[in-house]
Image (cartoon, rainbow, N blue to C red; front, side, top):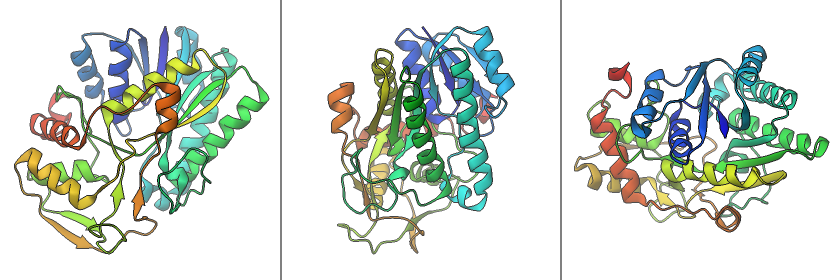
Length: 339
């Protein structure tokens, strides 16, 4: 069975390609490499010992998408392709709406044209907005508070409407919490362009000496140590969740929404200490003011995914830190040295 993975060269995309290939699926990757590198896909081949087809295209180009479906017998799609930085989305909202929403519309129109109606959609816990009650459940009210989250919410609503119009569709909406870590081989991991936006790649670059210190945004939250608490999920566990979601919708119609998280929260200071233990390096940090829109505590209720997908996380905080550090040490410049 041939699966199209849009954005397959990205952080979560590469790890999901590994899971798909190791499970015996054929993979076709579509990526424009705007926030990823071709070398990442070479590393997927190295990890799996398997080859796959890659198209360098932009999903906003419907003609290029049509070419893929014309040339390949695609049976389902896992859709990662999209812009994903919350701060950047506030600065250039039109770019996010154009890319994330128009690209998804293009993809669904081409899928309809070729009668491919099985889709796993990469959503986000940002659709819960400033919800104060935890854990977050799939039926909680949705209230995105930034353009990035809004694009995910609009796409979710759009896919719901698509199913209402044509009940042959089988769609999984996967709401991620905080993906971290790297493949256990140390061969693939997170390689952000420029200064990292997320905690783990920033910490690892501080530990390896590329960055001077970590900024901790606020220490006056109503948490046990004053810093924000988040649900960190190992990227390999997250990738396996995509495989489970794909296997479910291949045999079902409807729109099925799942939280992918551990159901546990860790504070920023707890993560710093865990990473120091894993790396045997000190992580210098400074407390700075809170970021607008951040909430004190966010973690998932993963009960539905456990019940319906028979999926649960297998890796803990120590695995997340150990695997991130191994990737950083083996690849101090990310994929740059392998280009």
